[in-house]
Length: 230
View (cartoon, rainbow, N blue to C red):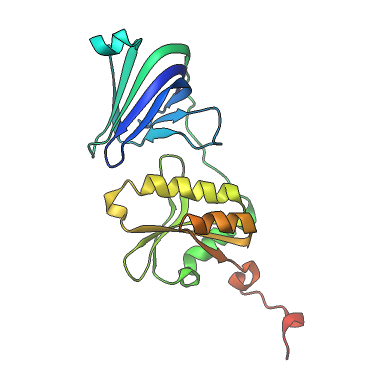
């Protein structure tokens, strides 16, 4: 991974056009070809990015760019679309590259992992459909489940024990990345947890994400005689 602290401006063109004025930012270039632009805020979410497969070309500034103070230009092009991320560097504050080695992957706690496994077998709890894959990959990590409902819509499902705002932000990030794939359209999200905090539910519903409460014991088939009337 290469991390560059730099004064830069950013232009993104493609399905969406976006512009970031000159400011100090963190640029991350990963081995998989992804490039991310971070500010000193916004939690883990980058201001802009290019997902793999992509190629990055570094060029000298043209006359107009050089007159404006640009010293180097990164052009990151997606291999399958016309999307282009252009980063103009005015000053490099620090530039560090390090091989992080093989990633062993995230190990979830037993309950959350078991919830995911059970839900993969019980997709009817999410309105029906069929399982496409568990741990469906995205450039920033896998979304827990990808299913396809009865109408052919792809549904990205994030499973938590406790549903909090961070979980909604995580699923939102996954949906933004998955939404760039034309083969996964239409696409929607479900946030599934044993408990969902009110603030997380409001945020999820505001973003068009459905919330589903999971009963872990019921999903495991555990019967509680004390809860029965007869």
